[in-house]
Image (cartoon, rainbow, N blue to C red; front, top):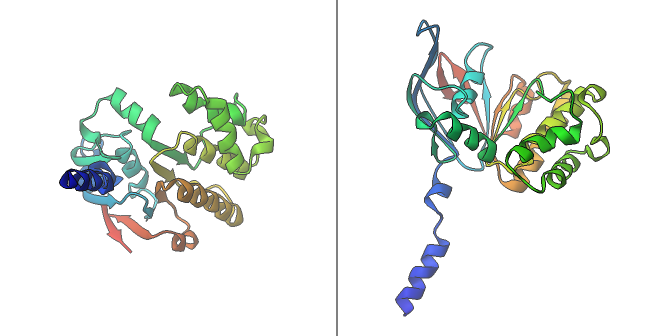
Length: 240
């Protein structure tokens, strides 16, 4: 009986295999365009632990956005393996990839990608409704409030400043409670002070939910906020 109790306690205390697995694990990833004439990623390896905050830098055209697209399953690599949130991305079909992005990944873009015909509240509700969430409006309001947009829920994107639109985009990405946040230069179109505020919002939300962040940026003044900084050069990663 004592042995059974000890075994049960150990099973409860031991982390699951999924919890131990990195949020992102890419090995030997190669990606090219133009029928192989333009190499973008070359035998690239990347590991991002769960809960880690990693910044990705590199010159324009170095493949940073392409790497995020591979990690999220929006692009398929020519070769190599990719596991995102414990799922084998390179072998999944389009429906499975869409479900992974819906349930496990939040993506924030530089250009917001908000629906202009929808209010801030409706934009944040959209992914929740697509997921069949009955509490879509409640969660959307909570998410907008968490980024300081509670009083702007009825406004359309055209009525918001750049910083406010990015806050709505962040609220939309975090509302479903993703394990992983992928950010593609979300402060690139904002002035430095507004960009810093946006990063503060991101980190505050991620720390509350222990999300992993993989963040593309050209702004080197933001890099000290991250636990690790990687640079993409020649299709491969260098840790700074």
